[in-house]
Length: 151
Image (cartoon, rainbow, N blue to C red; front, side, top):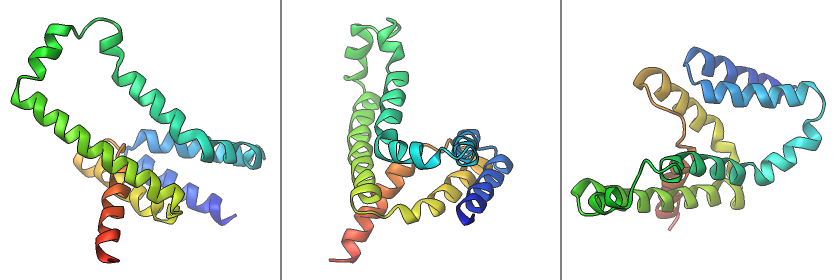
């Protein structure tokens, strides 16, 4: 019952904070729980959901490439500009941090920090107009800090 209350609290915060993606994800989990199929579906989502979600996210980002809106000439000009090079470096850094975060949350088993990250994401969506897509990067930064402190 306490997990349902926690999900309801997250749902309320997401709705109030206008973090629609968090609200939809929370509703999906609540529906699975209320239908009684959570014990069958949750393990699959927990095991492979991150991978499938990342695949879908990357595919969505690559649509302009796939449908021809980005040409080889566009790509050449981007890699010769300061903004393109900066994007490359930042992408390298954030992808590394995301990998560290995924490891921290899953392999190292620190999923208990998720509520704090969700509240931070909902607050940023509410007050700063952000989009809550950063938990992996957030946990990656946290993993780096944790390594530095524990050494």
